[in-house]
Amino acid sequence: ACSSRSTPKPRPPTPTPRPNITFHMYTCPPDYAEWYCLNGATCFTVKIQESLLYNC
Image (tube, rainbow, N blue to C red; front, side, top):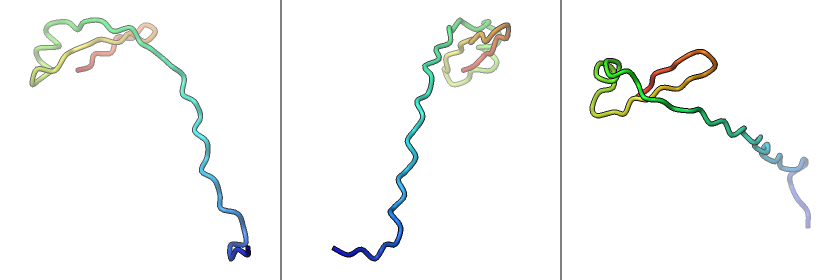
């Protein structure tokens, strides 16, 4: 059969596998959780090298 397409259809790029990185999580200081984690959010701390990052 004939095709009107002069060039083949490009294929989507294959996704590159992402590394599985798991960070250990710790509890937040109570003052931080009280002031910054609103509406019942759960506060947690992630340590990356020597830095402590607080999140809700």
